[in-house]
Length: 260
Image (cartoon, rainbow, N blue to C red):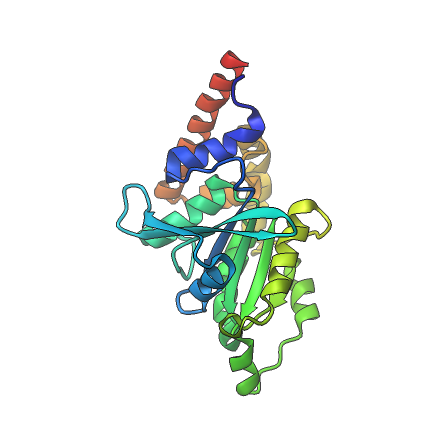
């Protein structure tokens, strides 16, 4: 029996990112965030000793992934390189962007520093444009409290359209809530509807003009609004990555059709 369309995303993960999964690895969770926000602490706290490290294919950037279980369900956590944006100005940014965009993890968890939230939201808003299944892990809450910073979690959730989970990973606080949010988002009992950034009228008009044609090309494989933005930006590196992804998916789909 050949591949199915549903399994093609996992096949791409193996082809492009050299990440191989067994049937027991369950859901795939990407862990993203700026440098020095406690992302590795969250990763270590969730996965313990069940970790594997190496390098991303063709890069000198280290790769770490691990497995944890929650409510008899396995989750494979992929720790993406720390990055401030997804603009592909560095190898780290390119890896993080490509994994979220083309690897299609079931959920992307953005770890943010609660003491400097505004700076961290830049990455969060960029990821919101890429994928629907997003959780914001607001880490270092103890530091924020010590500095007298108060964050309205409910208002933040409403503004971003995604679940927000406050944590202090170093003290193991909030991590059970994070695991529960990931579990609920994977099984559909929790919804994430990321709010899109609204640009100037000129940009929004340009997006509307090319969106139908982009939709015809990318179908449901990629977010057409995000691809439209990249077309308008004219970043050849990103556009080449998008084209390579579409071609690879077509090749895999042909393989499915021939072997099915």
